[in-house]
Image (tube, rainbow, N blue to C red; front, side):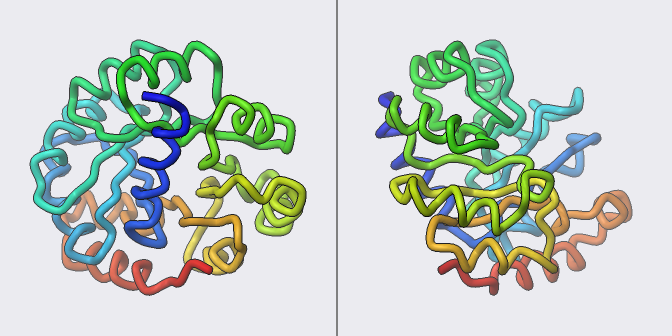
Length: 214
């Protein structure tokens, strides 16, 4: 998979809904129900972060849910890429980007949404062919004003900002011409997951699905 093909595939994922849920899953037995609740609320693209021992099993469970498009987040190494692909992930997300990670994603045909924090990083990825990127950590790096400023001289790149994004500030990002969608964890709060409040999560997802990208 070429970087251009990866970015085209990542763009399709980003355009499925204005919000991509960023999920930290501790118990894979809840994964399918969580996926069904989010998809029912209008958020089909699901990022399962590889931050817990249950993450890969959660991806396997979610991959079987109709209507869901499941990806793996927090990809750091080629081994992560191979494990995520084997588990059923159809896209990947990383906090940053290294040549080894990019090589692995291209070799394994896993479309990657690579993370950047600066204009130089965005330029380097664009030079390689990645025109769809993740702005992370968004709020810590200056929020929507910073992303707008980066976009002015680099309009070729479109972004999915994550990190500190919430219902309160999501529209600040979605109003930008260089933002395709945002990533956030507020649609699947830990308390509701632990309580099995799937209707409550569906309601949060539906609310998020009504946000409008520019």
